[in-house]
Image (cartoon, rainbow, N blue to C red; front, side, top):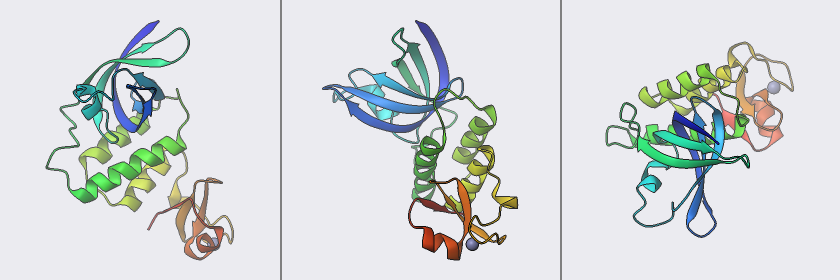
Length: 184
Ligand SMILES: [Zn+2]
């Protein structure tokens, strides 16, 4: 068993068995991981409040021999406290979309310091949703700045499609259907 202590951005939380929770985190040290949190569903669980999507936390993890991670301890990240009153509803909406997008676009156990830096910046500085996607896509290696439409090859890309990791102009995106994020 190995212990890790790392900063993390909470991507998703779900129920696991009767009292436990399964949390997906983007951590500074390990990249994306899924971790089991014991007793998370108990009413007085302090961890539960911290482990909400788009929160920043400091977390102590145990990497069990069987391969899974278990959360030993979790503390709020005081330098980046997202869930305070200073954050606007709009910024919270952007951060929630960011959590979903990162979850969709990353593989587990692929830490990326540049991505981690961008995640922290986007929590501190309020930008609109399209700008957030552009920053993240650049971190993922898909820079929209020089992209062309996957279908018609024009340069006015307006959407990024999850399914094929391609950029599309507004007109072509309307024909490809769902799972696209808007970049304008
Ligand atoms: Zn097009």
